[in-house]
Image (tube, rainbow, N blue to C red; front, side):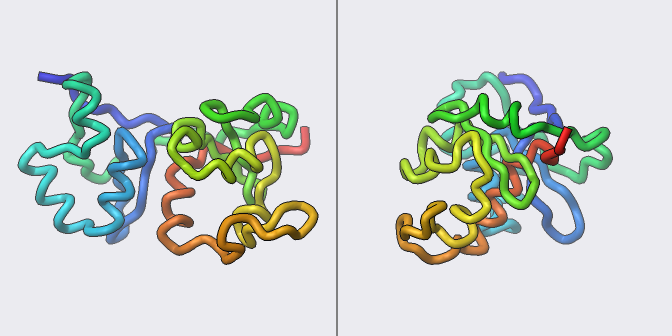
Amino acid sequence: MGTEFIATDKSPKTEYKEKTYYFCCPDCVEKFNKEPEKYLKSMKKGKMCKECDEHKGEHKHSQNTKIENIQSATKSFTMEEVLKHNQKGNCWLVINNKVYDVSEFSKKHNKNILLGCGKDATKLFETRTDEKGNKIGSGRPHSEKAKKLKDTFYIGELTNQ
């Protein structure tokens, strides 16, 4: 039997019915956001997502009940720190002065995400265009689902210091 999943300030999370739910992986957040009630019922039965099954019992989910005050103080990062995370598998993005660690996600996502690694990716994320205005991917803004998923990767705020 795996160990109990313990949420940390880097755990993917989402909001539902005024509660914050923490997960072990982004795949579970995505599954939860599609059908929250169905997901909660399956968790009571101890089912895990495909990604978690691949962990071969290294962990199991908590019941993802409301966890309050999991994040102590908001962390701050300089652009110099963000710049160090600029490649597939080690990718941080800045979007609207918020820092997101999408390192694991960048391994699975379309290669266009790499255009934003280690940079301010606000324009890229919001309009799907590069710094020169060239269309990237569909050229349309990300969906609401993608915006919610983005929030699960939040690790802190960009600071000028």
